[in-house]
Image 1 (cartoon, rainbow, N blue to C red):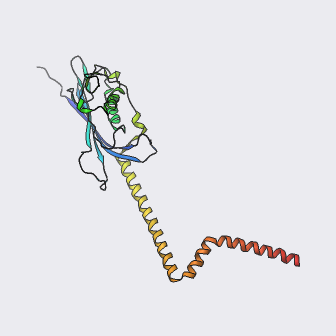
Image 2: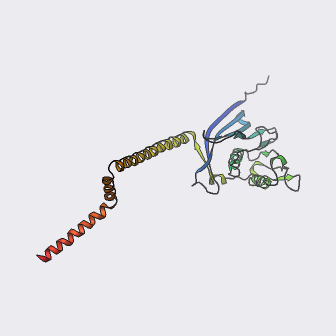
Length: 274
């Protein structure tokens, strides 16, 4: 009787924040948006070897309650990839958790072209690189995923990772990826120029710091308003005294310097007369 060892499964999960800035302005500009990311990895083992694995990165746009949002777009989505070890070959998919054909979609209105897709795909490519000899599962580009205005940007996106296609039309609107190994993929890190990863604890700390800073700013503004109100009340109750105080506060130093000069001149004159 044969005894087979039970399949072991390990899981990894991490939640963090993506801070996105305008790629034209760079990291010195204010953030355009923040995304909450949930990264989940699962590995299956047999006799100490990985026989299957997948990764899924879910994203959710973080919006302020004051944002005018009509709910037409869910502001959520996911990118996923999978690995499978067969009897003779290994396979990796960059579009599905299994080796079956999947698709890549990113729907974040107002953030098009800000390298968010590059960040997510780069995370999948980096994950897949641990199996360099695996064959990359072919996938299809649909004409529904692009039009004549954005097809070039879509096609360049994959070309940056060295993923080539056999296109079905002269306009390159649809096609199927060519056969290749994972080791032939090209890593891309241009997202670092305008995207920053932040841990949940650091992000909460930043919010608390901003809240504290805003609180002090409100106190400062409140003190300024109180001072202005008091100045108005003083002017109304004793206008002559208020005018003299304003003149002294503005020109007191000049008057004092002038007085010192006059006294010095008088002192010199007195000495000469003496």
